[in-house]
Image (cartoon, rainbow, N blue to C red; front, side, top):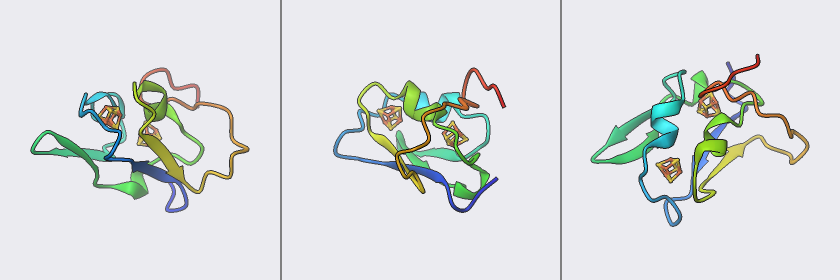
Length: 81
Ligand code: SF4
Ligand code: SF4
C-alpha cells in the first residue's frame, strides 16, 4: 500500500461508467451521486494501473507515475501481484 501512488481522475473526461469503482478490489474508490471519487488513496497498490486499463476514455492517471512503469498489476481484475 502506498501514499506515493494513487489514481487521479480527470473529470473532464470521465463518463461515469463505474468501471474503476467496480473493478478495484482495494476499496480505493467510492461513488458519490454516481461519480467515482478517490476515497482511500492509501489503499492503492504501488505500480498498479489496473483501473486505468478498464477506463474507456483514458481519464485515469497516477500520482507518482514517472512514465517508466509499464506493467499493469491490474488488481482490479486480473492481478498478477
Ligand atoms: S485498481 Fe489498482 S491502481 Fe486502481 S485504485 Fe485499485 S489498486 Fe489502485
Ligand atoms: S473508469 Fe474512467 S470513465 Fe469510468 S467512471 Fe472510472 S474514471 Fe470515469
